Amino acid sequence: MHFEKIITTIKERREALQVNQENLAKLSGVGLRTLKQFESGKGNPTLLTISKLADVLGLEIELNVKRLRSNETS
Amino acid sequence: MHFEKIITTIKERREALQVNQENLAKLSGVGLRTLKQFESGKGNPTLLTISKLADVLGLEIELNVKRLRSNETS
DNA sequence: TCCAAATGTGCCATATAATGCACATTTAGG
DNA sequence: CCTAAATGTGCATTATATGGCACATTTGGA
Image 1 (cartoon, rainbow over the protein chains, first blue to last red):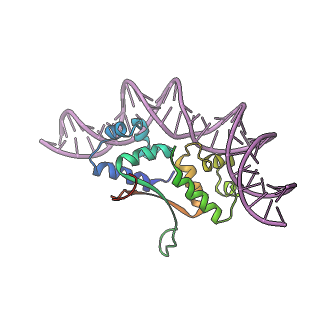
Image 2: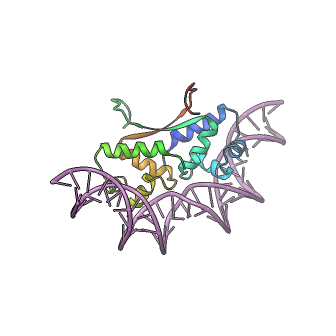
Image 3: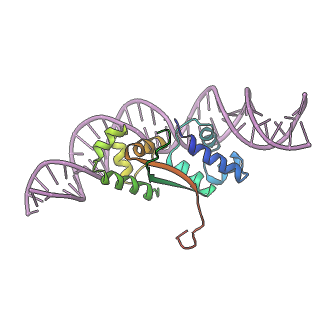
């Protein structure tokens, strides 16, 4: 799976807020095991899981039309 | 579940491209049943499912820091 | 109004996400 | 370098997402 960007965003945001996985798990209602799995790049989280994490971290999920970008690796 | 915005975005994008569910399913590799379930607001899709749909529809998934918005229902 | 195309739903099987627990490994400070 | 805190992983169970099929319902044109 290649969700690096999403994973990184969540991980960095969590660290920026100085919350460890254990607390983020509690605050978001997501299982600790699930969060660990997700942040370590394993697994394929559901939208609900991501949504719970995003809520607590003050992030919002967006789906936007991809614009043309002349220079970017695809 | 309250993923209305995401659902609507995908549905509208699909319609804008004049693709029916059956073809989007084939093009994206997502099961037709899964797509139907998703677009009709049932279920809790995985990131992979959304990702496959987004790819074909020319949409990108983003996770951004929520900004303060003085007037919006939370 | 009528019908074909498109979309939604019930049923079911299979795959896998979510989760807890214990333990391994890594990381950050001292 | 050492160690406690944080993070990652193996294992097992339960819940649920995926997906195929048939059929019901809705929708958009002619």
